[in-house]
Figure (tube, rainbow, N blue to C red):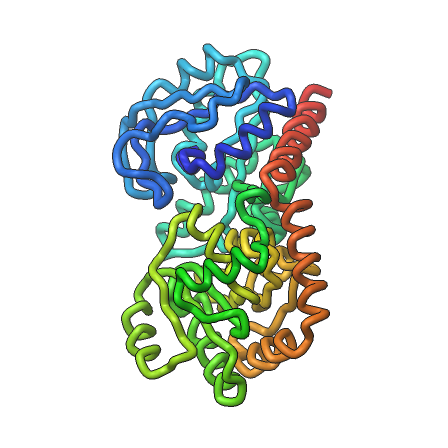
Length: 385
């Protein structure tokens, strides 16, 4: 899948290789991806023994990597003769069909499965929905395993016909707990000074991601404005860009408690998150979208930040004991929960420890790699039985 051009995802495959699995990573030579520079996909930055990178040219390019078609895939499958083909794409992707076609005539027949993140595949206009559902159901019928980023993804697949295949809940990318880690007092003070967001006596609530309505940014702004009227030490830092960036920046011009920072890369976020006290993701469900996982939640928790999340999609499952959940779209409840976190330093510290532990045990590179390996082996045993 094209997404594995992301260096963070390749870290998971490094851990897979150290678990005794030989990996041939197949990527389009040219990928349009927010974490990659324009042009050809760079070679693997971590040359782990057991991971081989193969870049294929495109028959047909497209801005959406679910629509691309690569050249030479069938020849590669016949040459490698893999035990497992893991397709890190939505089941309705054109490349899933290409992979299935490439498997014809290969003996022994590879075990095949997909790793998806969509929770609402039944979307779009009448024609696009019909085509998408036909593709999704057709690929599922030929799957031996299915990995969903979250339980809602598994439930969506079951609505589309998943029945009896080996399943697993695991994100497609892990968190490096050495990269996303808590900062000590001196590091935290320095990071705050560099960002210009406040001193040691300031309680900083943070959000990072797209500045769009469905991420619940307006609810978060309303909640903090209510709190700031009586709590001089509270600050809100928003990191990201999107359609709402300009109006939010204008709104913040008269609110000294608000700071809007531009979008940062993954390495910068690892350092920035440690400067904050609490992370909030107040997403709202729409007719075509709900929170599918929220990678920034896992990253924040790994950095030792307690999290307040809304009840949208997979957020409660990801947060677990690492924070609190409030009803989506309820700014009043969000304000009360933030106030509780500020007023309960011992509970906040306990949530911080729980968040860090949960991120390490459930969402680290090593944990995700082991979940994938177990799924491949279970599917292989079932098919070969």
